[in-house]
Image (cartoon, rainbow, N blue to C red; front, side, top):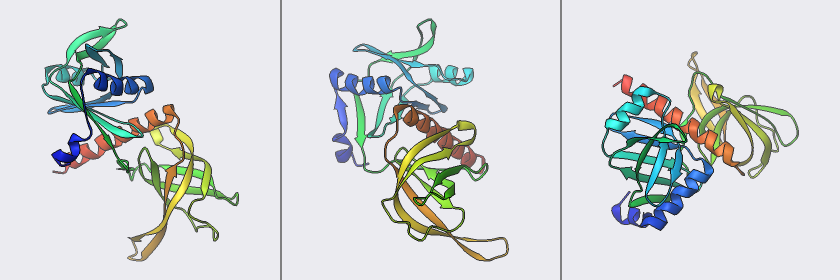
Length: 244
């Protein structure tokens, strides 16, 4: 992003920064803590005019490395914007009797409004499936291809109904996410396309591809989905690093 563009998203001063972080705390939005030696997913525990507190991660090694790190990057993806800020260091502390990180409230942060959401590809193994009904009431099963806080892209098992139209809303679309759980949401059809692949027999196959927009995510669903996006992004990065 150009600096002139990024400047318009800058929140400066205690009240502006505090307002954004309080929203993240209220909604329990997951945060990604990143530094030169790694990253982990956590959440805000407390924030006031003087400091913020972040929960310890699930891995003891990650927590110790974070305490030794400098120039940490904190980010959170909400439905409306991506929030980013920097912390010079983290300090070992406690919150309600449990270990936590603390740091002074940052002077500035970026709240980057966007029209499109970051999308992450679903793994090829295991396959994640979605279950719903077509508008005529017949069962439908999709293979999840990518997902974001705004919606999903899927590949269709079988043929599309003849009268399927853009703008149709599928009720209680169940998105299966393997070890990450599942959620149900109403989704509006935005795009109908085709994905072309070559089979093991060297045959060209065309598979229907659909793009959906979530009509509404509950706060708990948004938190769950963000956790999944962070986790899949990390898995993809780790896999790419192994093959470098």
